[in-house]
Image 1 (tube, each protein chain N blue to C red):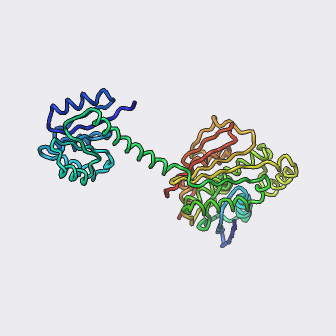
Image 2: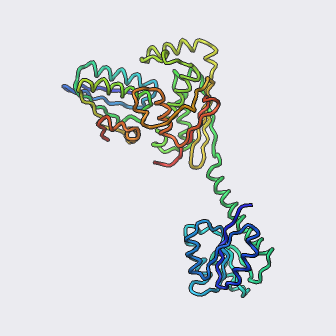
Image 3: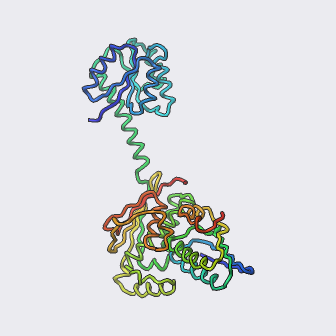
Length: 101
Length: 299
């Protein structure tokens, strides 16, 4: 799994490529923490090149969501592969976070 | 003996009585229609009919029209035995060409009537069994063994998945879902079955976690533990059985719900994700064997 992060003014754009499995979800957690520590108020995540996510990966996103949104910050999933979109839809993640295809 | 539902179509009422008297003691339930039009309606209204016995010459809609109508319906495989008092080759040929399963004369002989009907019912049963087997028999079996060290070196798991993908010729959507499921299963089997980690031993950073696992792998007793996986490819589904050598868990207490995946308590999130992504999930061997089934059709 590869994660790129670009910072533009008050926003971070994170692009995740590959599979988020048990092992790589720790890496996702570290990169999300990096965004949190940077102090930006908006985060856009791009999952267009991400094939799948494990329950641990979902857990990491949930913890981040809980922490990040406590501070009135904005989190969006701006792009999503079909597989990820279907999964997020199935688990109703789209009811927590704004998810675009 | 199983009951058989026969639809009798004939304009001769006395003949209905004769046929009922012969067949009912042999476990046939006979329903009656008195011309081809009634026969078509009775056939369409009753999906339990197993076989039709029909006269050829009848008012309104005759036996050949009835035959042609049923053969173009969605239950076209039902056996239809035609009968007539005019045993002429032209009738027989015409009826058989129109799709009659067999032909008998109206000078009824009990034994030959029963033999003809039972033979046709047996043919249908056999065809259904063959079709069922063709759909459910295993086409390919693939077995894999993963060692405890494969938890840190995921290359073997990935090679295994690629092999399954190529052998099964899986659609990318199904394959990606399968990757999620297998990743969850393997993770559970490694964590609980092989390393037997407690909640406290599951660290929140990759570095600490891997360090701890490496330490555990120094023990031969743990290194020697394996996971067995068996993939069985059927025509329309893929089954997977995974066995670990852990102590299992009380799977009777499991309550599956997709709503639990978004719970902030991580307990059971993985199993609920497996449940959501598969069509069947069964635990055995006190929870140390999990069997899942995934339909190979695009959702």
